[in-house]
Length: 514
Image 1 (cartoon, rainbow, N blue to C red):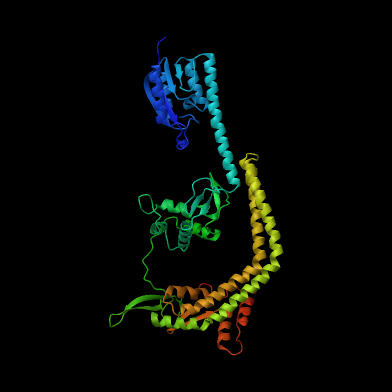
Image 2 (cartoon, rainbow, N blue to C red; image 1 turned 45 degrees about the vertical axis):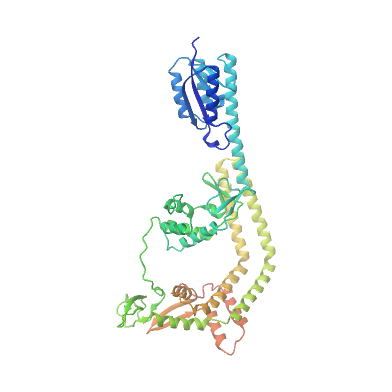
């Protein structure tokens, strides 16, 4: 019998780099030593890092093609599972033995002879390898399903989170999560594009490995990452997570809207830093007020505000910015209240809220119980689907039904809280706005002053170099209480404002300056 020449084959799975029992280098050393002791002639060596669970290994295919073109070759490997963990590759080796293309298989850890008994044992070894591979896959999938049921994150934590080894979940990073929130808020304003957000990240030390700003695609993925809402993703489907969300739903949706609007990045024009443009209308022709730079005879530059005259001729004159600011400060002083008044009003609002909470607690408890039941049903449904107990069509239909029910419950919860929230938060915000008027009288942040008047004032007009702004009835009432002798207690102001909120006038303090 002619002594065969052997092809040496060594393999490890690329996905098991940290857990592989024996590396390729170790296999090669052991196999070469085994060949030396057994006096085996090695014709060629093949090695690759790839899973044998599925057919398609390049080096294995190349080796088998060479064997199938020869007569009477041999294979030297560490164990049969190095050659095959699937039925196709295993069958190819067995068929090559049947057709005497392979006349010898040598393994340091496994005995084989090309006899019926040897072929049977080889088939058993291949079958055990396939069973191990299939069982390992099933165990992994079962573990993934269990983690999804518990709402745990499956892989490495996304940026803004850190992996928690103890809970096997993720937690918001105390620093990076705040950067994410700030980036979302900046982008939601509409004044930033993806590239400028990349620069924002770079300023906070978030760059590529080479130290350059993140690419537009990377920033876009971060701005559309639903994991920041507390959701975990498996393939293309999202599941409720048990970790703390970084962002609110409103902020996330605002950013998605901006991303949709800015399908392509737009160039931002260089502004001229005119803080009060877009606030006033001309009292003469109802055109908008614009601004420009002017230089006096001494060479000093000033910002002036004037009518755009888009509605025709207009005889209204220019107004210098410093005089405009002086008049706005006078308006702020009119509506500001003493700090002791606003502090008392805030405490009284807290007392009213406590009374409201105690009276509506029972209804909220019932609705929350219904909400927990719906969440439990949704979790059980997801488990049934992941375990393969119901078809996808039934799962999606029932899931949509439960999600609608959940939305309905959320609306009922919001409605139950409405009597409290629909007046408490607007009332608090109004008190803070009144308090802020005092702070802005000494501020040189003209953009902030403009935003304040757009929020709390209405119908701002510039006529004959004079500013005219209307305020909501409670603010006017507060001014009357402050200056008149009839009302001297802040309770009258607070009660008046609360009454206007209950009447449904939620935006009675301005509608954007128009």
